[in-house]
Length: 335
Image (tube, rainbow, N blue to C red; front, side, top):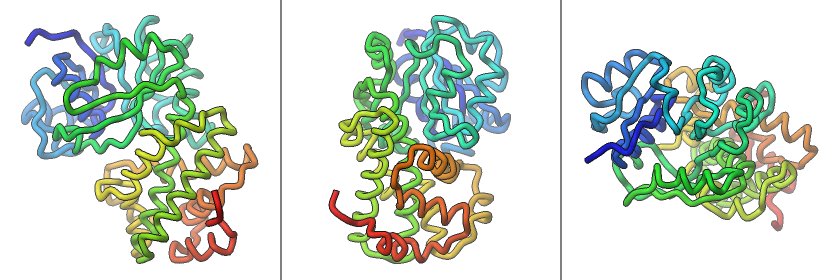
């Protein structure tokens, strides 16, 4: 089948590789940049990302590379799947190479710890005139599921409706569907904060609390997320959609969830340092928790669930006391 053109994906982790596979199966040639030379070599030799997406054969129209050469930037669409805490540094490295008319699509989730910035705000700080050509994609989507062609739906948001219509066709096929939104703030906050709540949900599972307890916890966590996000300019309706309740459900209940599994191990009594050092996969909720703690303080919003998870991750509070402490604060009340 004739190629529809070339797209660049920065970041050859599990999600970046899965996105590259979607694009390749939609008849695009994909330049997949990876920081790790062993990942690039694995894709070149075996057509498989053995480190981050094992067991998935990748199309030959995915071209892995370590170098950030001009070919990566001589394309219309640039997709970023870089861990949130490294995005600013990465953008500063490549900003002079990005064309003025390139469309920039963020596929990462999180909030920068140091600055408390959303990913859009990081892009806006570093790249000139980015607002009209920036999109963010988020929703309930495990990389393995997408790579295995299991039906998945996500949100894609932009301030610019014409850019949304141009970009949607990149991704949509018979197993991957995007739904458009103009609420960039809400989509990014929903995709970020759900990772923190998922850590708490995992703690509840690890400690051995009931499903009823977990459901109440997740519901109230979503409520806190929405109240905070509205204070920051998001739309309430976003949190009833894919990048709100949809993504939260998957991340809080799914066995593939890195954030839920981090919390589960904490609930079982494992030490945080050991959990974090035991895998090369990034559980963004750990970093987001510290950033969102700062945002909560600045916004003066009551968020006892999010603050309790922060206390466990950064103040050595006992995970076994998570629910007891929240009940003392009268958290589980009427919405």
